[in-house]
Image (tube, rainbow, N blue to C red; front, top):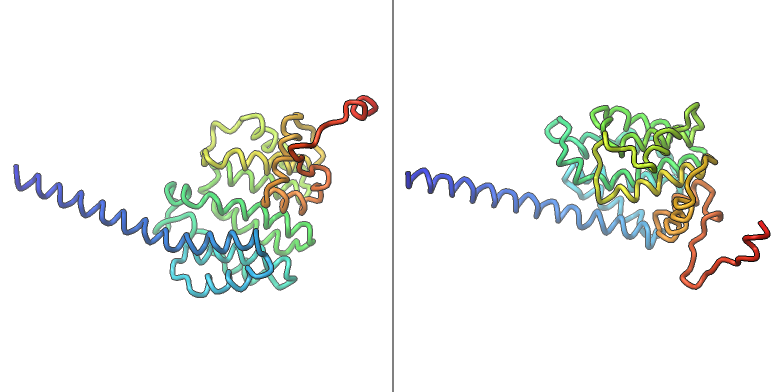
Length: 255
Protein backbone atom coordinates (compact mmCIF):
# COMPACT_ATOMS: atom_id res chain seq x y z
CA UNK A 1 0.00 0.00 0.00
CA UNK A 2 2.81 2.39 0.90
CA UNK A 3 4.59 1.60 -2.39
CA UNK A 4 1.37 2.35 -4.32
CA UNK A 5 1.01 5.65 -2.43
CA UNK A 6 4.53 6.77 -3.37
CA UNK A 7 3.97 5.63 -6.96
CA UNK A 8 0.80 7.74 -7.15
CA UNK A 9 2.59 10.73 -5.67
CA UNK A 10 5.40 10.36 -8.19
CA UNK A 11 2.94 10.25 -11.10
CA UNK A 12 1.12 13.34 -9.76
CA UNK A 13 4.41 15.19 -9.30
CA UNK A 14 5.50 14.29 -12.83
CA UNK A 15 2.16 15.49 -14.22
CA UNK A 16 2.27 18.81 -12.36
CA UNK A 17 5.88 19.36 -13.45
CA UNK A 18 4.95 18.63 -17.06
CA UNK A 19 1.93 20.96 -16.97
CA UNK A 20 3.99 23.78 -15.47
CA UNK A 21 6.68 23.28 -18.10
CA UNK A 22 4.06 23.28 -20.88
CA UNK A 23 2.43 26.47 -19.61
CA UNK A 24 5.83 28.10 -19.25
CA UNK A 25 6.62 27.27 -22.86
CA UNK A 26 3.28 28.74 -23.95
CA UNK A 27 4.01 31.87 -21.94
CA UNK A 28 7.30 32.39 -23.73
CA UNK A 29 5.68 31.98 -27.15
CA UNK A 30 2.63 34.01 -26.20
CA UNK A 31 4.61 36.92 -24.77
CA UNK A 32 6.23 37.86 -28.09
CA UNK A 33 3.01 37.17 -29.99
CA UNK A 34 1.17 39.60 -27.72
CA UNK A 35 3.94 42.19 -28.15
CA UNK A 36 3.51 41.95 -31.94
CA UNK A 37 -0.25 42.19 -31.44
CA UNK A 38 0.10 45.35 -29.29
CA UNK A 39 2.58 46.99 -31.63
CA UNK A 40 0.23 46.47 -34.56
CA UNK A 41 -2.44 48.43 -32.72
CA UNK A 42 -0.19 51.05 -31.12
CA UNK A 43 2.65 51.51 -33.64
CA UNK A 44 1.52 49.99 -36.95
CA UNK A 45 4.34 51.65 -38.93
CA UNK A 46 7.03 49.61 -37.20
CA UNK A 47 5.06 46.44 -36.47
CA UNK A 48 5.47 44.61 -39.80
CA UNK A 49 9.20 43.91 -39.46
CA UNK A 50 8.71 42.68 -35.91
CA UNK A 51 5.92 40.35 -37.03
CA UNK A 52 8.05 38.90 -39.85
CA UNK A 53 10.94 38.35 -37.42
CA UNK A 54 8.58 36.64 -34.98
CA UNK A 55 7.36 34.25 -37.70
CA UNK A 56 10.88 33.51 -38.90
CA UNK A 57 12.23 32.74 -35.42
CA UNK A 58 9.17 31.01 -33.97
CA UNK A 59 9.53 27.24 -33.66
CA UNK A 60 5.97 26.53 -32.51
CA UNK A 61 3.75 25.87 -35.54
CA UNK A 62 0.77 27.15 -33.56
CA UNK A 63 2.35 30.54 -32.96
CA UNK A 64 3.97 30.67 -36.39
CA UNK A 65 0.49 30.43 -37.91
CA UNK A 66 -0.89 32.98 -35.45
CA UNK A 67 1.93 35.25 -36.61
CA UNK A 68 0.91 34.67 -40.23
CA UNK A 69 -2.55 35.99 -39.35
CA UNK A 70 -1.01 39.22 -38.07
CA UNK A 71 1.22 39.44 -41.14
CA UNK A 72 -1.75 39.00 -43.48
CA UNK A 73 -3.64 41.85 -41.85
CA UNK A 74 -0.65 44.15 -42.27
CA UNK A 75 0.05 43.01 -45.84
CA UNK A 76 -3.40 44.12 -46.91
CA UNK A 77 -2.45 47.71 -46.09
CA UNK A 78 0.95 47.39 -47.74
CA UNK A 79 -0.66 46.45 -51.06
CA UNK A 80 1.42 43.28 -51.22
CA UNK A 81 0.45 39.96 -52.75
CA UNK A 82 -1.35 38.35 -49.81
CA UNK A 83 -2.41 35.08 -51.43
CA UNK A 84 0.90 33.27 -50.65
CA UNK A 85 0.42 34.13 -46.97
CA UNK A 86 -3.13 32.77 -47.03
CA UNK A 87 -1.92 29.61 -48.75
CA UNK A 88 0.83 29.18 -46.13
CA UNK A 89 -1.72 29.26 -43.29
CA UNK A 90 -2.37 25.93 -41.61
CA UNK A 91 -5.23 26.65 -39.25
CA UNK A 92 -5.27 23.15 -37.83
CA UNK A 93 -1.97 23.98 -36.14
CA UNK A 94 -3.88 26.65 -34.18
CA UNK A 95 -7.07 24.80 -33.23
CA UNK A 96 -6.10 21.15 -33.42
CA UNK A 97 -3.77 18.97 -31.40
CA UNK A 98 -2.14 15.89 -32.91
CA UNK A 99 -4.41 16.22 -35.95
CA UNK A 100 -7.65 16.29 -33.96
CA UNK A 101 -9.82 19.21 -32.92
CA UNK A 102 -9.09 20.13 -29.30
CA UNK A 103 -11.54 22.08 -27.13
CA UNK A 104 -8.68 23.07 -24.86
CA UNK A 105 -6.61 24.33 -27.78
CA UNK A 106 -9.63 26.20 -29.10
CA UNK A 107 -10.19 27.84 -25.73
CA UNK A 108 -6.58 29.06 -25.68
CA UNK A 109 -6.79 30.42 -29.24
CA UNK A 110 -10.23 32.05 -29.48
CA UNK A 111 -8.65 35.52 -29.70
CA UNK A 112 -7.51 34.59 -33.21
CA UNK A 113 -11.05 35.18 -34.42
CA UNK A 114 -10.68 38.88 -33.67
CA UNK A 115 -8.11 38.97 -36.47
CA UNK A 116 -10.33 36.82 -38.68
CA UNK A 117 -13.08 39.44 -38.55
CA UNK A 118 -10.65 42.33 -38.99
CA UNK A 119 -9.00 40.64 -42.00
CA UNK A 120 -12.35 39.95 -43.68
CA UNK A 121 -13.44 43.59 -43.26
CA UNK A 122 -10.09 44.99 -44.43
CA UNK A 123 -10.02 42.75 -47.51
CA UNK A 124 -13.55 43.83 -48.44
CA UNK A 125 -12.77 47.52 -48.04
CA UNK A 126 -9.72 47.18 -50.29
CA UNK A 127 -11.74 45.09 -52.79
CA UNK A 128 -9.26 42.22 -52.45
CA UNK A 129 -11.88 39.57 -52.97
CA UNK A 130 -9.34 36.93 -53.97
CA UNK A 131 -7.86 37.23 -50.48
CA UNK A 132 -11.30 37.48 -48.86
CA UNK A 133 -12.54 34.29 -50.51
CA UNK A 134 -9.32 32.28 -50.10
CA UNK A 135 -9.07 33.23 -46.43
CA UNK A 136 -12.71 32.38 -45.77
CA UNK A 137 -12.38 29.00 -47.48
CA UNK A 138 -9.49 28.15 -45.16
CA UNK A 139 -11.80 28.55 -42.17
CA UNK A 140 -14.65 26.62 -43.75
CA UNK A 141 -12.34 23.59 -43.89
CA UNK A 142 -12.50 23.47 -40.09
CA UNK A 143 -15.98 21.95 -40.08
CA UNK A 144 -15.43 20.54 -36.59
CA UNK A 145 -15.81 24.13 -35.35
CA UNK A 146 -19.37 24.41 -36.69
CA UNK A 147 -20.82 24.15 -33.21
CA UNK A 148 -19.02 27.28 -32.03
CA UNK A 149 -20.22 30.89 -32.04
CA UNK A 150 -16.89 32.12 -33.45
CA UNK A 151 -17.15 29.90 -36.53
CA UNK A 152 -20.78 30.82 -37.20
CA UNK A 153 -19.95 34.50 -36.77
CA UNK A 154 -17.20 34.11 -39.37
CA UNK A 155 -19.77 32.74 -41.83
CA UNK A 156 -22.27 35.48 -41.03
CA UNK A 157 -19.73 38.30 -41.42
CA UNK A 158 -18.49 36.88 -44.72
CA UNK A 159 -22.05 36.57 -46.05
CA UNK A 160 -22.82 40.14 -44.99
CA UNK A 161 -19.66 41.56 -46.57
CA UNK A 162 -20.31 39.67 -49.81
CA UNK A 163 -24.01 40.57 -49.70
CA UNK A 164 -25.15 36.97 -49.95
CA UNK A 165 -28.85 36.17 -50.02
CA UNK A 166 -29.25 35.82 -46.25
CA UNK A 167 -26.35 38.22 -45.60
CA UNK A 168 -25.80 36.48 -42.27
CA UNK A 169 -28.58 38.55 -40.74
CA UNK A 170 -30.38 35.65 -39.08
CA UNK A 171 -27.37 34.53 -37.05
CA UNK A 172 -26.19 38.07 -36.28
CA UNK A 173 -29.62 39.06 -34.95
CA UNK A 174 -29.93 35.81 -33.01
CA UNK A 175 -26.53 36.38 -31.42
CA UNK A 176 -27.56 39.83 -30.19
CA UNK A 177 -30.82 38.42 -28.85
CA UNK A 178 -28.97 35.79 -26.82
CA UNK A 179 -29.90 32.90 -29.09
CA UNK A 180 -26.59 31.10 -28.88
CA UNK A 181 -27.20 28.62 -26.05
CA UNK A 182 -26.85 25.67 -28.43
CA UNK A 183 -23.32 26.77 -29.41
CA UNK A 184 -20.03 26.61 -27.56
CA UNK A 185 -18.16 29.87 -27.04
CA UNK A 186 -15.56 31.59 -24.91
CA UNK A 187 -17.54 33.39 -22.20
CA UNK A 188 -14.92 36.09 -21.67
CA UNK A 189 -15.16 37.15 -25.34
CA UNK A 190 -18.88 36.82 -26.08
CA UNK A 191 -19.47 40.54 -25.38
CA UNK A 192 -16.83 41.48 -27.94
CA UNK A 193 -18.25 39.06 -30.50
CA UNK A 194 -21.69 40.65 -29.99
CA UNK A 195 -20.14 44.02 -30.84
CA UNK A 196 -18.74 42.61 -34.06
CA UNK A 197 -22.21 41.25 -34.82
CA UNK A 198 -23.87 44.62 -34.09
CA UNK A 199 -21.36 46.47 -36.27
CA UNK A 200 -21.95 44.04 -39.12
CA UNK A 201 -25.72 44.45 -38.84
CA UNK A 202 -25.26 48.23 -38.89
CA UNK A 203 -23.13 47.85 -42.04
CA UNK A 204 -25.92 45.80 -43.63
CA UNK A 205 -28.49 48.45 -42.74
CA UNK A 206 -30.49 46.02 -40.63
CA UNK A 207 -32.60 47.26 -37.70
CA UNK A 208 -31.42 46.60 -34.15
CA UNK A 209 -32.22 47.68 -30.63
CA UNK A 210 -31.11 51.19 -29.61
CA UNK A 211 -28.99 49.62 -26.88
CA UNK A 212 -26.70 48.05 -29.47
CA UNK A 213 -26.52 51.25 -31.49
CA UNK A 214 -25.32 53.04 -28.37
CA UNK A 215 -22.92 50.20 -27.63
CA UNK A 216 -21.26 50.75 -31.00
CA UNK A 217 -20.12 54.20 -29.84
CA UNK A 218 -18.24 52.45 -27.04
CA UNK A 219 -16.89 49.88 -29.51
CA UNK A 220 -15.64 52.73 -31.70
CA UNK A 221 -13.60 54.06 -28.78
CA UNK A 222 -11.45 50.89 -28.79
CA UNK A 223 -8.62 50.29 -31.26
CA UNK A 224 -10.18 47.07 -32.50
CA UNK A 225 -13.63 48.63 -32.83
CA UNK A 226 -12.30 51.69 -34.63
CA UNK A 227 -10.41 49.51 -37.12
CA UNK A 228 -13.45 47.33 -37.81
CA UNK A 229 -15.95 50.19 -38.11
CA UNK A 230 -13.54 52.13 -40.33
CA UNK A 231 -13.20 49.18 -42.68
CA UNK A 232 -16.99 48.81 -42.76
CA UNK A 233 -17.06 52.55 -43.53
CA UNK A 234 -19.51 53.32 -40.74
CA UNK A 235 -17.10 54.73 -38.17
CA UNK A 236 -18.24 58.33 -38.70
CA UNK A 237 -21.77 57.27 -37.80
CA UNK A 238 -20.67 55.82 -34.46
CA UNK A 239 -17.99 58.22 -33.26
CA UNK A 240 -16.97 57.68 -29.63
CA UNK A 241 -18.85 59.79 -27.13
CA UNK A 242 -16.74 61.65 -24.61
CA UNK A 243 -17.70 61.76 -20.95
CA UNK A 244 -18.65 65.42 -21.27
CA UNK A 245 -20.69 64.98 -24.43
CA UNK A 246 -24.44 65.44 -23.94
CA UNK A 247 -27.44 65.17 -26.19
CA UNK A 248 -29.20 68.37 -27.23
CA UNK A 249 -32.89 67.73 -26.37
CA UNK A 250 -34.06 70.50 -28.74
CA UNK A 251 -32.14 68.97 -31.61
CA UNK A 252 -33.56 65.55 -30.78
CA UNK A 253 -37.12 66.94 -30.78
CA UNK A 254 -36.51 68.65 -34.10
CA UNK A 255 -35.57 65.30 -35.63
